[in-house]
Amino acid sequence: MKIQNICCIGAGYVGGPTMAVIAKKCPDIKVTVVDINQERIAAWNDENVENIPVYEPGLSAVVAEARGRNLFFSTDVDKAIDEAEMIFISVNTPTKTYGEGKGQAADLKWIELCARQIARVAKGDKIVVEKSTLPVRTASTLKDILTHTGDGLSFQILSNPEFLAEGTAVEDLMDPDRVLIGGDQTPEGLKAIQALVDVYGRWVPRERILTTNVWSSELSKLTANAYLAQRVSSINSLSELCEFTEADINEVARAIGTDSRIGPKFLKASVGFGGSCFQKDILNLVYISRSYGLNEVADYWEQVIIMNDHQKRRFAKKIIKNLYNTVSGKKIAFLGWAFKKDTNDTRESAAIYVADHLLNEQSIIEIYDPKVKKQQVYTDLDYLGSRSSEENRKNASVGTDPYKVCEGSHAVAVLTEWDEFKSYDWQRIYDGMLKPAHVFDGRNILDKEALQSIGFQVHAIGTAD
Ligand code: UDX
Ligand code: UDX
Ligand code: ADP
Image (cartoon, rainbow, N blue to C red):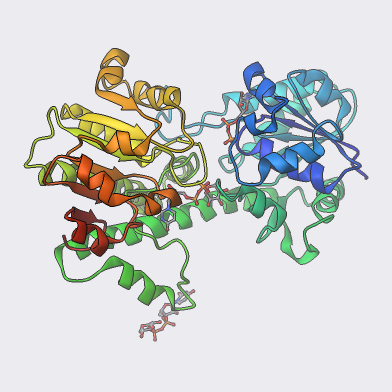
């Protein structure tokens, strides 16, 4: 089967970049990305391509090339579903905030709505592709809804999890380590798998396209993220031990990373991992394991989250302790709010939790992030519900000039590893600060000795002060 029309439901961080790259690589396939959020679609269609709602290096060029040619953004979900032979579901699947599984299970409300909408609109057979991260066995829910409400049409459900990392999305999509496609091992299922293999096969070498059954594919996505997150929690747990001994976490990471069985990546100690996937996926894994009565499995993975929460809290506490156990009324400058560099995404960013802790201690926080807008910072703080939004606006502010943000502060805390922070004029920052001037480097990106020679008291992750 040759695919000529693709529809993607959900124009977010996953759907937008993924479809842009498919459209770029397959100029003969019409790709329509739809979303119920009108503002978001309008931003994707903005005449000035720099205003698209997702910031990713290289993305605006890809969108500029394909948009209007074979890449379209629209709010007309029904029309796009009707036209397409293949429909990607790329809507958000946040952790449930209510009811059974609250705080752990994924909320599949939006996925279910998509399935019902597809069933209602479809007039011909469709291949439905799960792109969002989903708990294992979601495909069977989708299939159930589609086959029981879909007017006798045939629906094939594929799992094609996304492994792109934010900040390198375009690179990861153009040259992926692998593409994973799971589907039913029946003749129709295998045909559907082949149709999607043929799409990716336009630019991804065939040996990098792995095909499995649906369940393996779904579980592999959760597992990949759990493993990656576990590496960060593991190195972070040892960073605390290093701070009490003469060991240096950077040296330890280098030493173990050269073991080819361990490998050098994902060993950067930090203030804690964030992002929309790691915590959600692990909580999902924990929830599923517990639902089968596998308590040891659940406890094992839950510890990764417990460690990460500890790391964020520990960073905030370290700031307080070094500012003589009180930060009440003291200004602390935050460099970075995004959950990692080169993205404007702030979901689950460690910065939010560190700020919350400090605001509870009545600190005054001023934030600078090169890509995150002021409104987003307030949305993140308000979402926690720790205090009124008036209080958040009174005690936390967002600046556009990093030097001004640092001026008059007792401490500068680095929360995101943006490259530009390394090249700041730190002497100038020091001159504008109250003394003793502290730097808390939550990402170990600054030159500790150079800062110390300026006069800063420097506190890094995983080295003794
Ligand atoms: C280990 C370290 O590998 C080595 O670097 C260190 O110097 C000493 O400890 P060793 O105990 O000899 O070496 O064997 P290793 O190959 O690491 O296996 C350890 C155990 O893990 C074995 O029981 C092995 O069967 C098991 N294992 C290993 C698995 O069950 N699965 C794996 O994928 C790898
Ligand atoms: C992750 C997976 O990498 C990607 O494959 C999946 O599709 C989605 O989830 P992402 O969340 O975009 O991608 O970013 P990632 O680079 O994995 O970083 C996640 C968090 O871990 C960030 O907060 C990052 O700062 C932190 N991290 C990462 C560390 O603290 N140390 C490291 O060594 C690596
Ligand atoms: P992700 O990181 O998984 O891409 P986002 O939250 O960035 O998550 O994007 C998901 C998008 O899906 C949002 O823009 C949201 O408006 C959209 N969405 C959710 N439900 C539906 C639906 N039923 N129909 C169309 N779009 C939807």
